[in-house]
Length: 403
Image (cartoon, rainbow, N blue to C red; front, side, top):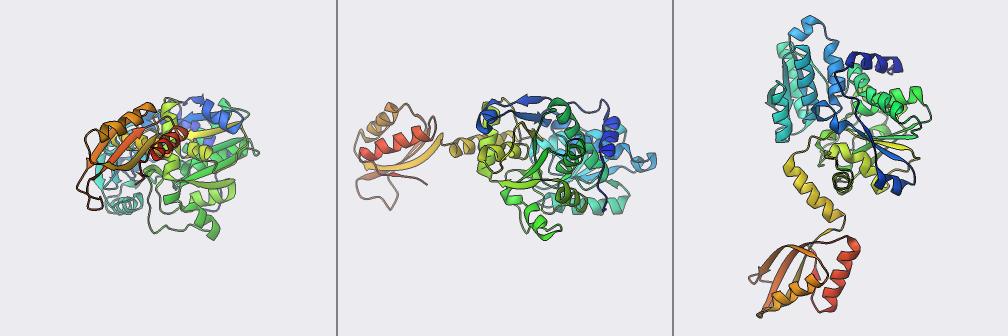
């Protein structure tokens, strides 16, 4: 496909969606506004039906199938959000759905997809592996493949997010959104550039799953040899042909963020904004917080999804606290005499630090005779608080070591 979608395509998709999707809220973010020196807003697609923007494109695609095609059923491949969007849309439109998911797909996303009525099959370790299996299933059974990003109807549906943003924040100067396969960013760019050519559209990828930078440099989609990121929703190994054409021609910049950046963003969104967001949904905020991109406010960051496994959320919170300098792990060595541990903990308590756990070890062969090692996990108020504690311990003669 050489031609790009038009604003009319996105507007037609919006008419088709009607009351099917929510017009999600645009919430102000004081922490981001303060950091950027101007208004910053959060487009809360984590509050969309099925927990992400994906239902927009899935519904448009399935709604435009003929009755005969719908009767054959639909098939999709997804790590979770597209799966839920397809399952919900298919149920609303009376079509049977089968979804191929990676073996390690988050349990809550699997359960939710089943809850919307889809039949689940597991295939491979990545979305790309699952997509191969879904295509084979479509060829074998006649089911219609609902691609997670590389189809005009899907892109048009996702672009309705931008129509809402431009209505809710008419003076927006920058829109920042996550980038995996590229369906969301392509749709946003189509609508935003048609209505407001001066608006900058920026895509954000996870460093461990960034297929677009090398693809843009090469001038065509390039497949990554491996993927490694907590942001499973944007862990796509190769851009689509259609989405690559849109991103390369319409998007102003593509940047990357680390898992540590994402963890800090998730923690801020939870703690300061009271919003539960999945890692892929927070990469735009991560880019703004980390300085990975320079923007001109007013800026809108799209929170693309909120379907996070509670167990992952616990790990991310801990990781985010560590990355923010509020969760500290270290070891000290001290004499193996009665009362030494109490003295150490008393000094830590003087700094009003919360001790989370303590491990007291005598059996380490690296220890000298009469010496013990104490491993501590503590919670502090931030990097400065942590530094003061470590300085005080070292001044008292404790050798502080970090893992």
